[in-house]
Image (cartoon, rainbow, N blue to C red; front, side, top):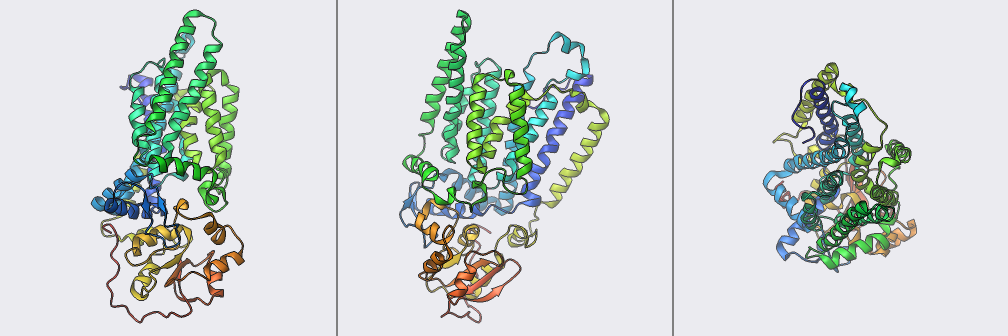
Length: 535
């Protein structure tokens, strides 16, 4: 779909070069799931929530995973994705989850590439362009690759195996349909496919609410264009566009109501925006500005280049795109996790706003040969690194060493074999709650996990956002059988030590502590807790 039937000569070589370049961009995107990433911490509690949904039905749930949660009904608004994740896990195991992450991330980038291509390929060639021959054999090919690379750079850090990635793929599909429709005079029939996609998306993630916001921006642009038109024939056409975008806005808004979790979806959106101290606080990385972190300066530089190109070549953009980009920039500045949303909308705009480039480079036989060799070698490297059938999950999760993100697999095994559940409670830290719920949830409840909405503001202030004295006072009242904490940079380790907890196990990643009155059993006769959901 990225290129049409290959034509003769320079056109054929340039389109081949375009496909090879997109393939090279896809390599790190797909390879990240296999070569670099561990499974997302949230994916494990999503699997446990799916179990509860299957047992209790689709609707608000009273939390049974954490003993410190509010114990009030909460809304698992990603219920459809959670059930899908569990279905995949039980049938294909964790390797299927890794493969699905790679495919979703690749699909996301392919849809961005399609939108960039739709934004550039439909531009008509001028008479002078036809005289330039090979330079315009495949007009907009180089701009397409730059726009796609820009989208991959911004979005890749926020893609993983969790519901939001599936929602981003659907959002990218909506973006492609919108861009394609605008480049064809806003007359395509397939644009109405955005409505069922939005209905599906609202049962996967709150990002579905962005679709009517996008149409609101495009409606504002259509109204602006109508107001500046004096020609009666053009005014009639602009009236049609205004009516069309108004209808799409209304219908996409109604599509966002197509969920059995509607009251909770609204409540969760309001809570995250105005009442969640962890979302507003400095602790969760993806909630921080997009320019934080090691790759932050590169992302910030790319966005500045984008802004510069849009400003210099703003006459190439229509009013709707300007309003759309303004909305996207506001979201980007709100928090880093919106970088992927920004990348979806901004990539095709960047492709259109880039300076004129010769596509001859992509068609050079030597370059195509080098790219082909690199693509084959890269695909083989990723294929060889895919986890084997006999590789345990615990080994794969921590394969990159203790200095990288991982999980307390050995510490969880120690707890399963040596800690007798009396209170059936574990103290843990934020990133490991989901894994411990998945690994030990049949016998222990955890202290905290990534579902920030199921814990009170007072809880967050007493544990992660407050002073040491508040944490000491809070944890002194917590009864638990053990604590599983990071070996380094733990929020709770010093506080528990001050309360008399003793370390009984540690490895290069995690540590197990017991409360003052407890001691480890010599060897439990209980069977090891089963690896949940088909491990």
